[in-house]
Length: 401
Image 1 (cartoon, rainbow, N blue to C red):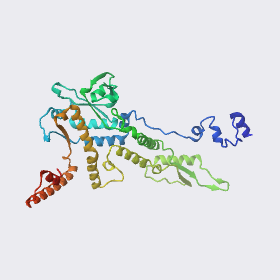
Image 2: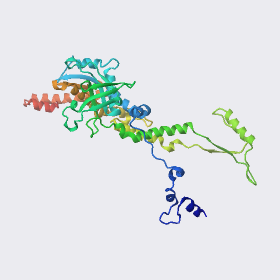
Image 3: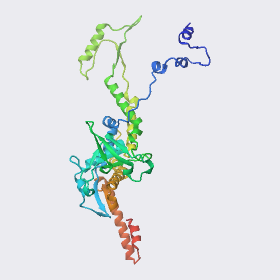
Image 4: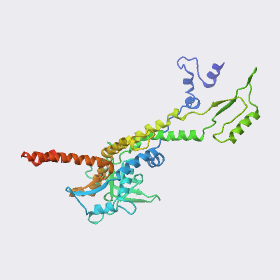
């Protein structure tokens, strides 16, 4: 009878050996997985709204802020043909880049923009004699690039990019010509301009972090019943339920007591916990793995951040030095090299050096280098004392300079 009902009403032949399963037959009518078995699709964050992710996800912001803070700790030094320059309009610009920010603030902002968008825009209008006295980082998500359309035929950057359109908060727009903008990028290996943001590759761990916080909040806000107090009295007919008066008495006693007091009752009851230990959900382990993915994407180290597992002082110090050496110093120097090149100062032999040797954590490396140099200098002096001729090139090779 049941089979005939499904065959007549839904048009399903359950006796057909070719379809075999009831679930396969039902799938032709409506999505059974979603309506009965609760099958869900993955939910991913929208990486088109990168700024919102930066504001809402603390792990992403912590990593990007740490990187920006480390990059902004440098001391810019201007050189020309190997000699340090103490007076130049670029140094004046560094002393006061704009009305609000210091140069450290500028580098910090540029680092954040680079981390989020892989594109950094700075308004720096060219004055008379090619001088510049203003340097203002702009939010990359409010910049529209106007390309020349020459594609493979471009020889210079201004042949590739004609101008930029900047949109203010009130919706008004301002066009900025190429000469008045510094445009920095972090290559993605594919696009010459407008490279893809690194945040796009972090869509999955960022989504899991957001879901983990959501799950923890649901568990805290909607914890439900803590458990069940059930009667344990029995007679010949089975279990004897509590009377309404006994239930109200126990509940009222529970509400009236402080958290450390013990309930004493003459009722024979049993406690059955209804809670689920959150540690079994592995939410914190998932959060750690996702945070590691973000840390690796920006070339930092897990020991630089707070952790429940803890880290030794030596490990933290070595990790900081490694991050400076492998990530912060090269990336900051690359930023300065691009600025010098777009200002056209490299043609005249100028070089802007990102100096980090003043940081205490790097003093050990500086002392080590000085010790090695002294040993090599002593070696050269002993060789010369033995009347062994050394050419200047040979001496520099020994000194490694």
